[in-house]
Image (cartoon, rainbow, N blue to C red):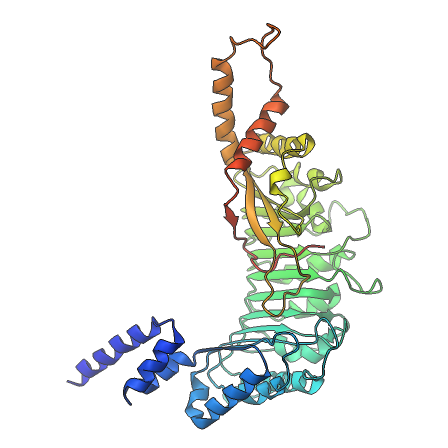
Length: 474
């Protein structure tokens, strides 16, 4: 009989977990005393705090039944503009959420000094919780079950936080995912010798990154899978940059060559330097499958020699591509020789929707057509993606939407359409023009026609990148 009762509970739990509407969960909790704890556990599992009033109400509800604290597994404290009064109580609530798995917090002062509701004491409270959690193993500490942490914060105006301030986050013994923005990743830092963490994903967004400090941070994870280096375009000219110190940067990355599967490098332009032919490369990054580089990144130079390309590379993404620019971006991809590779070209984000105008300019169309034909000979597929609705600068706060991307061109579709077009031309080759002369269509013109035809069918095709929500513009 006892086993049958357990089965009934499991069925109820399975049903409750599939209830999406909070009002339905509240109704279940009010149905009977047996259903109340089950429904409440699901109701408090994920909480979003959008202003100080939300924080105050949450405090009252949780303290009325203290057992509710342990139900909270995912928490967002992301206040909207001008509604921050009272948000400073959140650290005291987080401290009691002993089963918290995911935490996302934002400073309301990231883009201006409108108020003082986010004070540095609040930041210090969060950091102290990490410091406690990093203490003696087995002790009852806050954040001891935290797995994912997203932290958008800096001081008033454009003042970034310091790496020493947030270092306890990187020393966490439980976090597998860290997304942090507006940090000066620079200067010497001391970490315990041999100290290792379970970190799998590290996102440094809108940060100033010194390669030597990055080297220390990357010595901590046992096996990092994904690394996003998104350097600030607003960093001081005196800050060291990963783009200006490529040897040091690759040396730092090599500490994770055994496990790194995804690497993104978005950065300001670097000072031009000749890379040594025997310098560091990605040739022994055996797990690296996807590489996303800005056109400004000098890491693109490491891919110009075929035998230096990561052997497992499946997708190479080049971002900030400007089709009106006759610069170097085309020369960055012409050396690619690896059969089976997929090439993604991400256009620089635009405020409006520039897609309809993309192939109205013959020169723009011919660029992508030349690339598609060249890569066909090498068995490399190509996708062109446009990002629009570029209304905000990163990091994206207050639930701001990042630029939306959609596909404008796919080489596989182009190759198929080109076959059909060649067949149509062959069947119509006996037709003459209005002057009685045989019709002649140049190869470049035919490619432009096909590209425009493809675009007409792509107006509703959306794109979801591996770094969705992280792609940035200049």
